[in-house]
Amino acid sequence: MDGGSVAWWRQKRTKASIDFERPYGSQPLTSSLAAVRGTDPTGLAVPALRLAALLDPDGHPHALWTQAPLLAYLAAHRTSPAGKDTARGNSQVTADQVHATLRLLHRRALLMCDPSAEPRGVRVHASTARAVRETISDTDLPRLTVAAADALLEAWPEADQHQAQLAAVLRANTFALADHTEGHLWFPEVHLVLYRAGQSLRNGELADAAVGYWQEMASRIERLHGSGHPDTLSARNNLAVSYRQEGRTDRAVRLLERVLAAREGQLGPDHPDTLTTRANLAVSYWQEGRVDEAIDLEERVLAAREGQLGSDHPDTLTTRANLAVSYWQEGRVDEAIDLEERVLAAREEQLGSDHPDTLTTRAHLALSYRRKGRADEAVRLLERVLAAREEQLGPDHPDTLTTRANLAVSYWQEGRVDEAIDLEERVLAAREEQLGSDHPDTLTTRAHLALSYDDVGRVEEAIETTERVLAARERILGVDHLDTIATRADLAGMYWQEAHFFNATALLIQVVAARERLLGADHPDTLTARGDLDELLAIPD
Image (cartoon, rainbow, N blue to C red):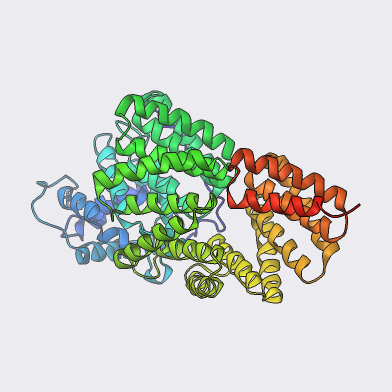
């Protein structure tokens, strides 16, 4: 069994373990456990302490002890005062009994039970925990591992963004459990809590940590189960999504294409896992500017999911929402609005008006309204989304920043340019600090700020900023990425405004050729660029 440590990719802790009680060696611990058994009529203290010893010494939530897997394990593994297992499954264990047991262990200085310290309200000193783990038999360790992992999985919030601190604590406890249990989370099969922890890193926008985590997951599962095992493919799928989130879209595409081919061969084209990979590949194609390929994949996934799951299943709604974004990118805005309005209505009914998925759909619909010239409606929707995200996530969370940036563009479209500049400068400062100066999201914000500068007559700043964005996008995304082409068109307009006609013409010729090749001759963006070029060429020398 592959039991090595998985701690190398763990986030650095901001505080050390707290010395809240006396650490035990094996001999003092033996006498303390005997004393506890003598005062524990329920027989729950020893198995509860063994469970706690497998978790993070910095603490875990009290709520973990209300989860059914832990209660079931304790009911089946009570100990007698002599320390031997009693008959298993004799009676159910209640949460009140467990909390009474934790208080008993607290009084005996074997752990700290402090509800005011949530979500780290139950803690075991690292030395004590190590001594307790030495008392766990080889036969009982796998059962303890699964019980703790199942409880962590059940305790995880549906949306990490709403409870970021709890999610971080659950990740830390998952990592500690993996370190302390000799590979039992990995074999004979990979436990779902390991997948949930990796998804939580992505949900928390911890892209670098997520990439490291999934690289280790994929490598280790492949060693244990082989390169074609379903768990290996799942880990690679998640690694690819993390690459995409980190901005390494080319690596995401290559990996997803390999996973899709393997899953189609093993499972068939319409298996749920195959559909998931195809949907993820579509998003990566879209991010690379390969919108036609993205739409083809998304339409196939949507048809399959509607047939298998129904039109309002969450996975179907996600696919429909992604297809709407691709339609929007291709200029099919009316079709995008139709899909987004359907998704928004379903998500409001199923999830509520302020659920993260509902907010995302509302934000996308606002962008479509804006593109159709319905700026007032776009502003109202985005202001509503921004208020909810600031309250739920804080002012500098990536999703909040995205909403603030989109609201700035809508203000700009309404002529409220000073308000737009204020928002864009705030977003740019936050993104440069969080993501770096060349991250795609930072470049998008800088490009929008340049347009706002241009509108208020700060043309030199606008040109300098746009030239910087163009150079970065050509280097990072490639000369034919749609975002690069859009920046080239923006810069051409600024050169034109400053009467740099030669430079403007050269850029517009490139823009028209690229858009005709990538979008087609009749795409609205192609027609706009061609019209601008014709007008520029008509200017007398």
